[in-house]
Length: 114
Length: 111
Image: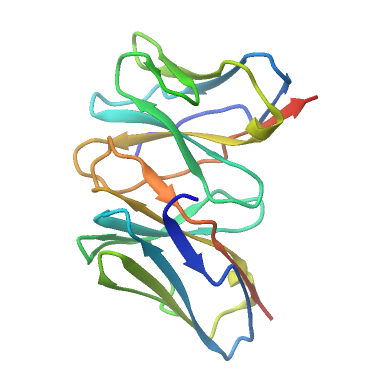
């Protein structure tokens, strides 16, 4: 238990569906992150939020839409995904964006697009 | 973020020490060295980090070369639970929020 909770753990969705991934932390952290981990590829940083402001968007397609309503919650809204978007989506948080702080990861949502 | 180089895989016997190397020859003076590991079917887990001096915690030790161009993560007594992919990552302390993962080293523990 890392203190970062992701729901759902598994999700199967069609290409025309709309779904959302949820991440929650009650560690008092100010920075939150979304990562994508495809099979046999390194983790890819998607989005970074610091103090509820998006500070990083790594050329992610618009079919992925993040939302950070407060410092404890982070969402990833999904619509019209492609099969190649199937992956493990990981959320993380850290106390602040400084490099000498550790990040805590959730267990991820395993997404399958059919 | 500066690049790191790690072996793709390593094996070690259970209950023996493990030394996981990482080369970061282009490290800058403002880069911290972080290590994370990812157990099967889980998200990455923080292990240890350091700047210049060697560091110890309950999980591992981090030995940093004097010129900082390489470092070694030391697991003092490997258990089966330590089988994971280990990532060596550089992070600039100047407020860069990125935590960028490479391919890491897949550690196999032999019973």
